[in-house]
Image (tube, rainbow, N blue to C red; front, side, top):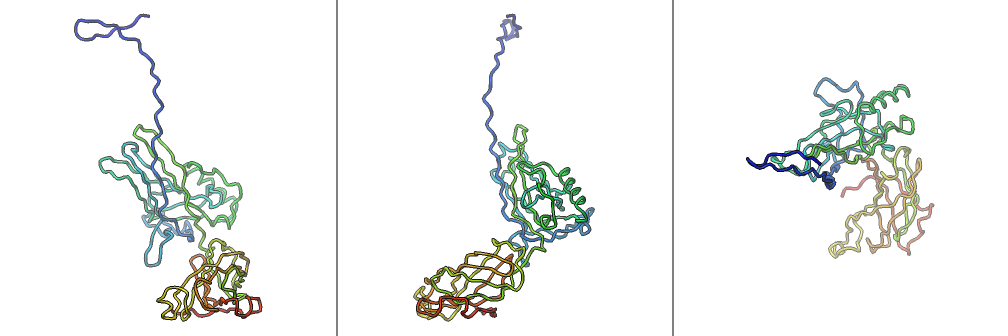
Length: 359
């Protein structure tokens, strides 16, 4: 086979060696950075109407707060990108949009605030080896969620189509909802957070989408107004079923969002430390009841074993129901030993609301 020649040096002509096709080993996949939600959004939020926002101004009202936020110390949703390697990653891009809480499908509500466009949030960061740093923390301190007016089902469908057309398709995301949105299902969303990175070869990579905990309409935020207990006297050994009757309906409250605590009252002798025994007073022990059943005006709980707390035959405690950040008024419950009276039958003294004691 004839070959071309190339000049090597000044006087010598050498034949060019035939080119040999070399099959390179496949390049390993770049190690991706990790994405975590450091602070979840608040469980309840009043979604804002479009009439409440000023699209052409820099003002953002009705900010979405973080789970740990209080009146005196506000916090916001926060995410962290870790394991950033300048030798591997050249650019990062964070995308955030809203999805339905159950199906994680496109939702008609949209995001408004800094770095938001067409209803979603997007922020880019160039990885600079000179600056260094293996982490990138993003705090969403100027972010609001805008709802749509539910005039008709067609209005909702148009809003969903608008979100689907404008928001980038995220990995692992559901393309459409299998059920029609209703007033109830519209009021609960999640934030879908996805990270894209570009490696040093210029190739783009998407990571799996991370979803926040549900954000519920503030109208769904309800407390439990307790009425009385039945029975109000149960054995110390635990395992008794106690019915907590409520004045207001528990409709819309998730059983998993309810916690029922027992706290011992002062002035009772303890089976605990020597210091407690010497003073004859009982430290404030707290135990939790397990939730058995939740009905419209009834919450059934199972009492814990209280024998390790006291050596007395009778132990008075206050029972508190907590739900959605609210705390009920206290109810008094009495635990007794084997040698004391009835074993918590329904005709024993019931427990009405009692004023909270100062501790």
